[in-house]
Image 1: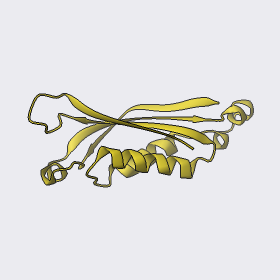
Image 2: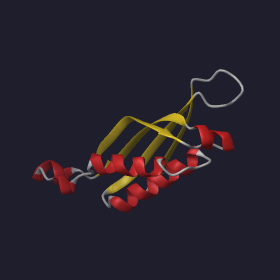
Image 3: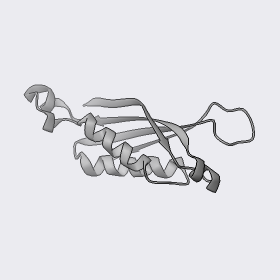
Image 4: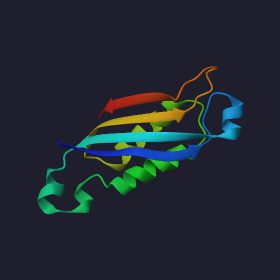
Length: 118
């Protein structure tokens, strides 16, 4: 088993519970880590045997482009897409950060982290 991670993926997107958030947009950061059997990739030195992190990035990017009310929903959708794309993945963790969330006070970031095992 091994881990493949992408950290600090940055997006400007239009997510949020409030309609205004979906109009104005905000800056987001996403971290994604997957646990998978990477032995064949390590032995064979073959991209098709691993979790291609370019494909992993594209999964996150695609879901960040779809307006959602909740960060939890985005995280769930990313996890399901990772499982669909990569059969060797056994576990996924997705963490989504919204910068300066509209909570009525000073807050640098709000973070939601979801994990799921196959």
